[in-house]
Length: 248
Ligand code: PXP
Image (tube, rainbow, N blue to C red; front, side, top):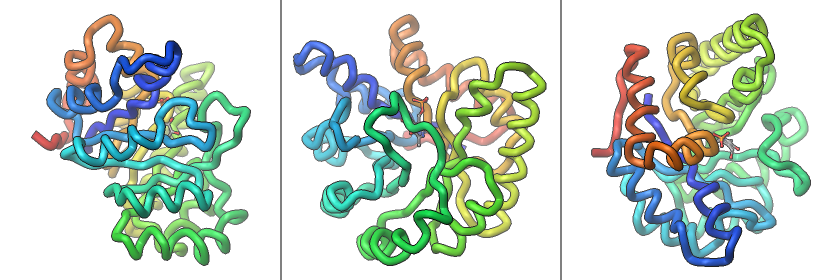
């Protein structure tokens, strides 16, 4: 298991004043120095946080795993196959949403992804990860499509309104992770994770590989500093008795 830090909201803060700081690339460097195994960014169609030149600078600087989160539009496929990150995480994207709201509906996207998306990414050697809710049918279709990985959407778990709901969601995530693992898929997870809910996730859901965390981690960094904050998240993973890996 390893921590990948999503640095989108360092760019959000930078863009708020149109200045060059804080620099998301500098943040990426600090995260890796602090033990993160890689960096995630989401280049959105509206460029509300990460911009094209950030992507190329990240490619230069990031030493660990670089995860390019994107909608499967022609524009993003062109940029992604030019940059060639280690991993592309495909997500649904709508203009109005504040953040990614749900996983892909594999039934709807299957034919399009098989014909238009998967061959273009795989021919460049880019690992494909599909952002999914823990729905067995979607996970089975991801394997059938030939993706190497899925990212389980942990948002519902993170936003559960009662301990009972959180337990139910953890069970769905555990079952989803087990199914994906049986089908030979790498299992990643992310969305809404923070210092309070990460521990129970990593204790209860097996086979997790990359854990992608952004908004809460960047917010915590305002109070603890980025380096210390990354250490706190990795500490939680270690405390759960799971082996963590960093690129150090
Ligand atoms: N994984 C995916 C697919 C996402 O869309 C996001 C949000 O950009 C994250 C992980 C990180 O979520 P958060 O910012 O809530 O930690």
